[in-house]
Length: 209
Image (cartoon, rainbow, N blue to C red; front, side, top):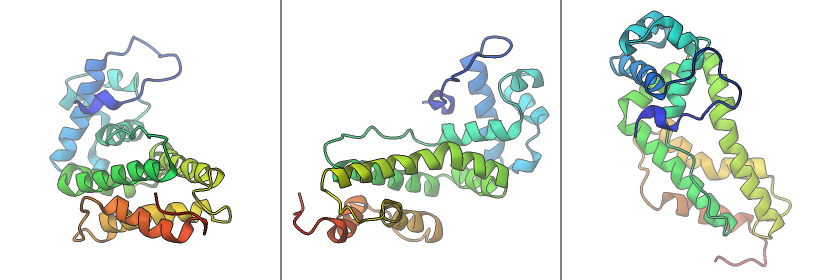
């Protein structure tokens, strides 16, 4: 699958000429090629991107207002898509979400490109804020929705702070992915985290499924 294949379609009207998926794919992959070559984000000019992708600058500006907006789409396209939740129980949904997070951690470790992309992104507050708004915040909201449903269904104590519970679930994987790159992210880790945390968060009368 190409990097551009996962890019969402715009909701509003398209300005200028009709979009060409092949052209957009060439632009996104042109940026990734430059990043693979170690070009810092600060040196990724629209001129250089256009030259690498084999398009004109106007072609890029018809699709993105500037390189920061373009870079957000590159990072978003490089990440795996959000998983489909089974909806059978809170634990089942959380297991799918945490396993997806573990897989993303493994991908970042194994890909020098992804590591470089995220490093450069964090050095630019504007890009990091946009990434947080468009990628991180929706994923966090998804976990919070699952936790609130778990409270309604009696799988989670009603007095539990779901914001804190979210951090308890995702924290161990994020720590191992970002702060402890030497730590393992083995298969079964998502289930181990879930069962450890849920042991203290379930209603007293609940039993492990």
